[in-house]
Image (tube, rainbow, N blue to C red; front, side, top):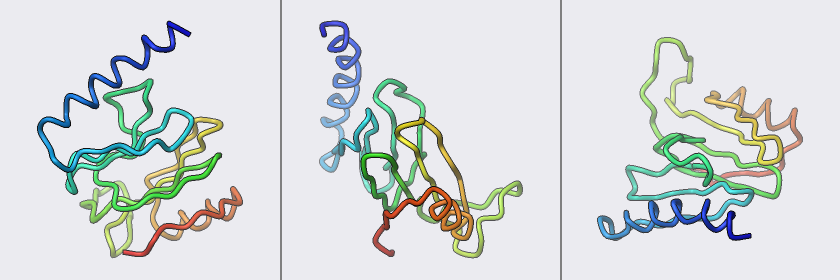
Length: 128
């Protein structure tokens, strides 16, 4: 039990240290060690508490939803890269299996819906 607290201590110190620099800083526990972190509207991401410094879903997460098994997320207006066809809206979508630790993404909207159906995910995000 004490060892688990020692793992959690660096996370708490890292996350709380940022609160002094931003009035809009907050986190949301998504379960299984996953966290939504918002430093401000321009810097929102999803991380895992045991892998700080590595994004599960990189900034800028516009919306997300989660349940016991999955996290789904959408990034806002991501600039297109030549190796990815993100469609006309420039948005990327992500699916994270919290049980397996598998990350699907970035996905365009069509492949995102297909993967949701394939995995029988019944989560939805608000439309923005």
